Image (cartoon, rainbow, N blue to C red; front, top):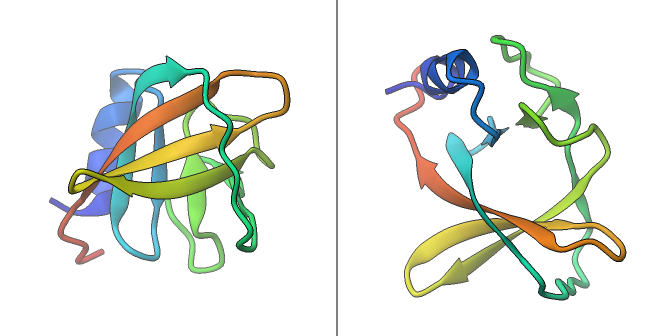
Length: 103
């Protein structure tokens, strides 16, 4: 399934998700967790709200998270997760899966 099609399906269900268009990842909200996410890498930020389309200039889209929210990808036990990094707030945790991207 293509990343754009998957995003459109989730949008119809009003799901809370993040799309990484550069690596064809779709991350769906799983849980809220009180963890401190520390990362020395360059921060990744949500760039646009996902509204059913993808352009060539944007990589990170979200259905519910505000634009500008910092996120971090982490691999745990063979599963890729995306954590939000918000001060004084529990992290929102998203489970990520790769989809076949043939836009």
